[in-house]
Amino acid sequence: MRNYLDIKVSHGFQMTSYFYQLKIFDQFCIERGITSPVFTMKDAHAWIQADGDEGDRRYCGRLSIAKNFLTYLNAKNYDVAIPDSVPYKGSDFKPHIYTDDETTRYFNAIDRYYTARAKINSIQFPVMFRLFYCCGTRLNETLGIRLKDLDLKEGIVRLCETKNHKERFIVLGDDLLELMIAYADKYFYQLDGDDFIFNSRIGSRYSKDRIYTIHRETLQYAGIPYLGDKEGPRIHDWRHTFAVRSFKRMIDSGMDMYTSLPILSTYLGHKSIYDTEKYLRLTMSIYPYIEEKCRCQMEYVFGIVERGDFR
Image (tube, rainbow, N blue to C red):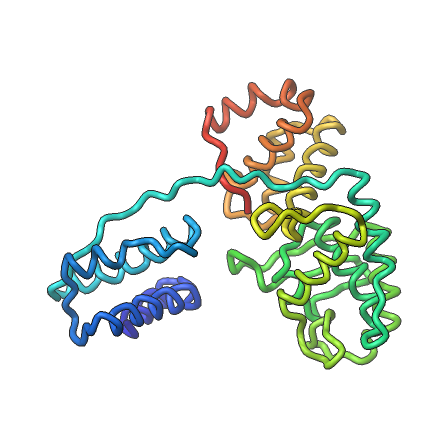
């Protein structure tokens, strides 16, 4: 496994996901008493059984990485059975797009957030959650912003902890930049360049679970029903809302779909416009008049494809 990881890293792949998946596979082998590079069809059949708690994406990722590793062993003449691939089934999940009224109530609630134990929260959270909504940042990207990543003179933020491991830049609108500067004046004098700009009261980086808790509390205060982990509304739905409203604004301004799609794709940090295309389809489903404008172009560029999952 170490040799295999070294080969993948030397070819430019990130070690993190491979290491995690192979660790799961290694634990599986330990539990089955496999002590030498021999993997039978019976082992393969047991490996491909889905865990009840696994989502489709995680299940297919687990099988894919283990299959590639077993193929590597097979090429080195070890006696291993290679399980069949399981095609990924796209989800029919549809994200929650916050309405104007929900957006107003949500940010009225987050602006009133206060705890005596951590007074800094009252100026941190209005900035943090507006980054989700106004810039479409993912949660991990936002929590990973360091002081040295900010250029408040130009209103630019560098995102380093991105999903596809390619840093990118976002631009703050005038109102958000003003809010960020106010936050900086009150807090950044305590920070060094490598410090995260969003820290807990003990000085450590916020955990995702803590921010999820704040989000659910804010929904409650805003009178927005929370339907559960898979139903939302989720923090990540602010990213979806950003994408839909950005498309609507660009199309309404007269911008051509061919122009708007790669711009938003780059801004969101997608690998290709085919990931962003799902947002355009979602926008058309919410605003039918946009479908009238873009349908012919959509079918010419992408064809008629099934709706997939959203990232």
